[in-house]
Image (spheres, one colour):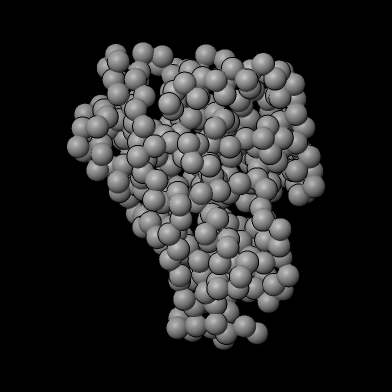
Length: 319
């Protein structure tokens, strides 16, 4: 069995926490491994270098994965740890998402130094976020707010908030929990009002499709429940050709032997909303079909004119 394992990851505190979690799980699952057998390799991605503008200006989600996947393909690393919501729906040939950790809380949180809840924000307040989904969700409820671009890791965004660049921001509760920073949250936002991004809160491990040894190393702590939910959500995203250029939300959950999912597509200003809910058997193929069917239905309801108008609105916003 393979004795030396190189884990590729981005270098943010959250990414490192996730990679170290995988390392600890590998050590716990395999008594033949020692800590010195597993190396965490930090790889800086293009997305990490771009902090002053929307990612959509530079290429989208793949900017957080390309350099890592290049090293996975050439054998420099043996696996890569990612936040599932950062992953493009189409992976490079020869790679696969092989394992998922148990999903953290998928909800968003509201953070503000001076306002106790999202509803308490004053008229016309600045809300900092780079997420088109969060922007649309917020403006759907509070069209008076002014949204300003907030990028960077968790610590950077909290610093920007302290510096007064915005009155409030949104972050994923999962990331705060993994960093032991949940006390930074002012309010946990309800799923009914703020449906999360597809795959939010789920950590995945990517490997070469032919690497049976690495697959066997990961198998003991793969969470099939998380895999079902993320498969449905990513399938929905793929059906809509979703990316960081599209305000899309989805959340699937396995409960009482049934996988149920709620998903939506919004206009940039949140005024237009297309929403579907569905259920299926707890099987990967059924989950994939559920996401595909819901995405196809919403695409049909919205019509191609909606997507053209959305693209125009986004281009005008980021120019």
